[in-house]
Image (tube, rainbow, N blue to C red; front, side, top):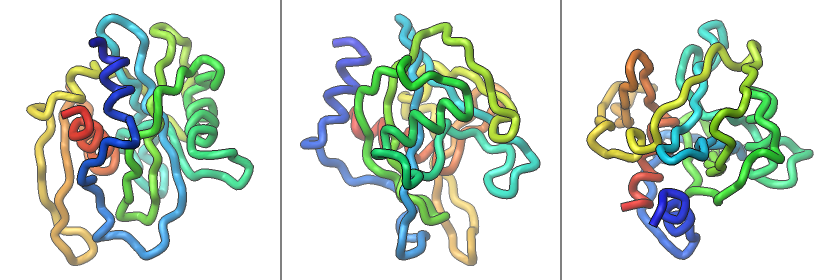
Length: 190
């Protein structure tokens, strides 16, 4: 079975797992958001991640999937993820083969995030929007899905101790919501 088939099986809505998220830190009402997990279509696939600009008000300098809030004009979370990926990295929506949507992740900042898994051509010319993306890079899918590459850590936040996932890829630190979404996907595949 190849990686694409494994993901399709893992994303079957009938498969249920206990989701880890930040719901216990979140506000009562969650706003809808969506991210695209763009997987490059090659024998050894990779995942495209973005580095947010350091001058942004929220999540400055953090590693993230392309994505954002679901707008009123978006048909659904998939449409929002595709729109955001186009805005942030110029990924044409027609070039994304959507495999499915992973379990929603509830962030401590009050978002219910739908992770949309999509396959993109391996050498697609990406153009980062400097207003939203400082840089982008590709991490092997096998690295992200290996539980040995993720550490569970704790830190104080808003007067409480919180736990989160943390991964190091070269000079890049992948943590928080992004690493949490990856950890949930790893649990789905187990």
